[in-house]
Image (cartoon, rainbow, N blue to C red):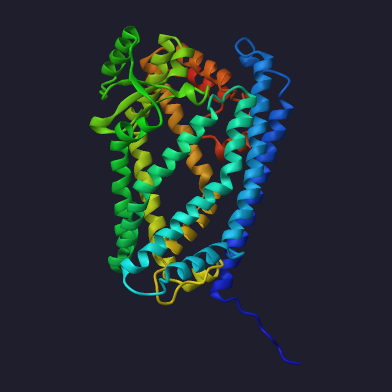
Length: 438
């Protein structure tokens, strides 16, 4: 009787690691979502004592029902997304698409420019197919779920207009940028990943400059803040805190959703303050001041810079990993794709890496969420020190109520997903904050 041994090939190792990571990620997400649904449902019929004088039971129950509905939809999206990912990779979907385009363009080999049309066609086809696959969930979220809870204000006409604008913008801007990235990958040698990362970083910074002025107005109207009293209060607050901006603007967020928000956009000379019209309709002047002070706190503590540096550092590691893996045949074959032996595989490498990288986020997410919650606490403390802390609490309570934010999320779910502290923890911390804490 002879002994036989079974050895894993590098390709099989890649398949195994991918399958195990995917199973672990999906299992973790299903477990967390199930916890969230159960916990919110268990606390649905009683408003937390600390909020009893501010939030009615019907409003609390609406928030619970909204949270449960969103989480259950997320579970369906997770199951569908997992099936789609397997279809693209191990079941051969991406390979079939790539091979069909190779035959259609007859681009088995040759110069970079002779191969470019097939690679761009692969990227564009993948994007279009992915958008079509996700379309039912997008429509259901907007016109069923958000509509059911009174948040949707999007009309079918506006939805179609947004889709057309997004597609045109993606083609006009996305295809040239993709071509530029592929050219860098093909012509800069073994360190192409470093040059591509530099290109991506530069484009990201450029987008922060041009987005507020050129891109955002394609989708929303931005009008200068007309309320002179509020404008002078906001200007005084910013001067007191040592900040300047390009201006104060009101965005017509109400034409798409009843949700409210305020934010800074851009940086340097292009930085501007944007208020949703829904926010100004819900909050009084003291509360708007306090919300703005919170946003200023993020700048004061350097949170925006810290996030950008972290994002660029992590992306550098990701590009370095991509640079190595894209040169390994097992990276492609282990994920169900046959790489070209004579042509370019750069577009394939980008797509495969883009699909598998989010699996790592399932396990690193809690660290990022914890950092984000820490930043929110610091911004709250800054707002309490430089504005009216009671007004900030009042504003948050109004926003929790109007946005149907649950007051009773599952604590474990919070650790993994919440970028902002849950309401009880956040308001309790603000109540104990002092000017010195900022």
